[in-house]
Length: 137
Image (cartoon, rainbow, N blue to C red; front, side, top):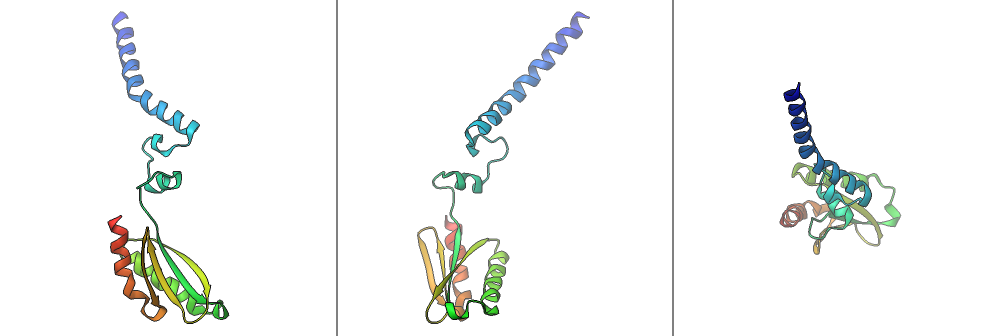
């Protein structure tokens, strides 16, 4: 009986030693909302949203499209084609459409690097450079 009780105490002590750091980190994460303390759940997106410097950047695609042609189906087709091109390279790009005058242009921005502007007909020419700049960060 005495050995069983002693063994149970040892087992409970081992469980407490293994579980306690995770429980404390999860409790601190709930209190502070700091993703660095979230056990087994640190993601680059969470750290970037929290404001940790040097975690990574987004690849933003600015599409300057004439306001007169804002509802034109070619606008969405261009975005779909560029999205598919980035997806084939394993990169997710954010799109921002801006009203402009003149012909449609595409500019890729990765951190402090700006690639372009390219005319919409040659937008694919900047995709490889944008992906390489994204991977350098």
